[in-house]
Length: 78
Image 1 (cartoon, rainbow, N blue to C red):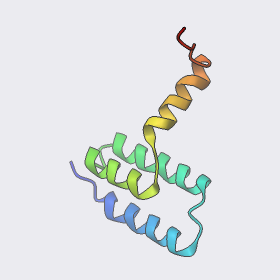
Image 2 (image 1 turned 60 degrees about the horizontal axis):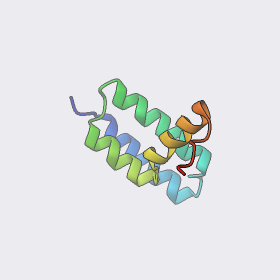
Image 3 (image 1 turned 180 degrees about the vertical axis):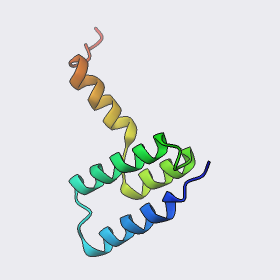
Image 4 (image 1 turned 135 degrees about the vertical axis):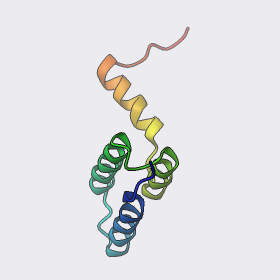
């Protein structure tokens, strides 16, 4: 089920970038909305990844940061 949401999110990201309002907070809010749309089946995985790339989101980094926040700093080897 491909999302009709993809073109809308793409347009919002581009407009925000052109207006200079694509702050870190705005990027994270948009990322949350995009992730929600993916969870609801309104975006495909490839569309999700494309929009994350347009936002400059490193989802793996945020997941690692969340893991550390929830579980504490990982122990160093040695």
